[in-house]
Image: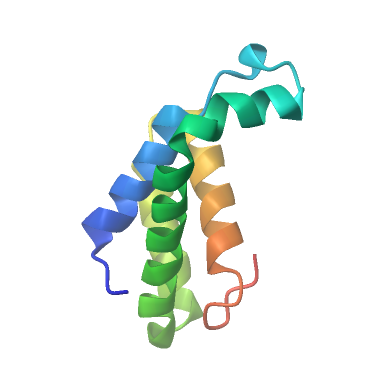
Length: 101
């Protein structure tokens, strides 16, 4: 799967947008899963896009991957976006090149 930087960013922004307020599920993971269930196919597609982009840029080295992450996070205006994006990238890039999530 080949993906663009724009697709990568869009996938992350989508995941941020659908993440429910923690008050909606009060740490009840069954409730969280119920809330997120309607989005499952799109979530899987977003995750695949994030992973594919990591694999695509991995040959450019760990420093480049870190730069991509830092530039993306620097553009975010709220802590929720930073936290979700960092978490998703670390999870899906784990094992891409030298990346250790």
